[in-house]
Image (cartoon, rainbow, N blue to C red; front, side, top):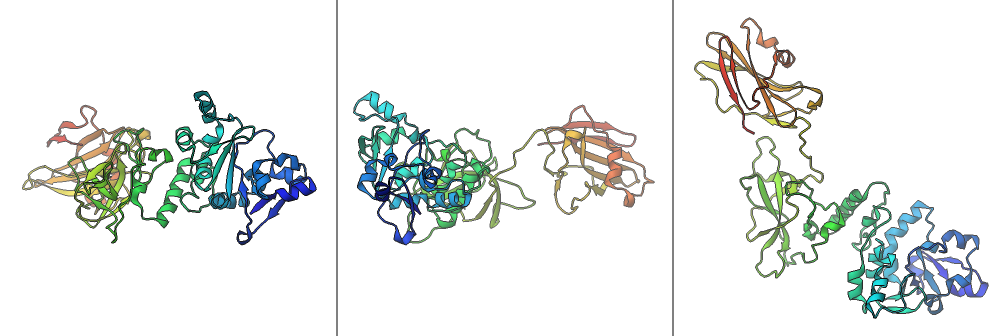
Length: 464
């Protein structure tokens, strides 16, 4: 850790940096501030341009060593910058005192006008301000004239109303929280704020089983929007200040889930009481939407869940269900009306009398396992007028054959076709590509079609 030696500065007239190991750190003060045009930098000190007169502060006169981020970190060295940011909270916590210099703050804040001027200081909008407020035991605020305004405990009410955190670099909204949660992770500027915050939460999960991490809401999203288990932004915890984890002598089952409702939703109970009074021993719940995965049912021990939904509110669970392992995609697939169904579920509910006709062939797109019930088709329909999904061939006792074909059109429309196949055709050699040549989808009513053929009258209907 580099420190500015103010005692040495007074003796030689220039500011100099001293290197100290963690086990030999002297008493030091920290000077958080907002950047101004005449700020002294690490390069200024290394080149000898910074002089002792630029360090005449209350901290310098009281303590012989101080730490200022702009002076003590070589920000041109990415490895050093990353190490410094990961260590920042510990450095603030270890400081004897923290002198917060507010360049535009008035000398006192006893009247409304001066309180408003105090609140407008850009220091309160910095992402790093949060740890600078929380980590040190003692923080004293100074005006632009270096007049003491007050200590953080005295100003706590004003500070709570004033802070409006923002960051210059989007990823810093997550990086500035690392020290508060005692986690460390590499900084990847350019990954975006959401990815950085997701990584932060993943690191927290590795060290803590506090399930209030999942107690967030996103009021900007519609009820049917799909989200992951982790919050996309710190702002999602704006309304979560009352969320607390249960504290038990014995560990609880980590996650439980209710049975699904008629619309496919279920509620997962997390190990947190329901606010506000916490007196009814209920559990906080979040809504989940399940993905149908082949024949998998809710009663199985492992449930695949696609996403968290209804993220604008919580549920309350009085009695928890059977514990289950739950898998939730962090970035669920959004359903688009401009692409094909990612998965077709086809079930023949009612067909021809089996005494008269029987199914002799079912054709699928190339590469689809014929044993599964879910037919995956991933080719975009934007380049196709109609995309054949499957074909079912029936054969009567007299040898006449009928092919019923089902396809996806753009959006969520389904199209049918029915064609008679010559009895001379060898079905063993017949393939899906040949069936696509037969396919001529109806455009009358995509959910309810009637076909009058030479040997068959066919009525097809579908329900989504």
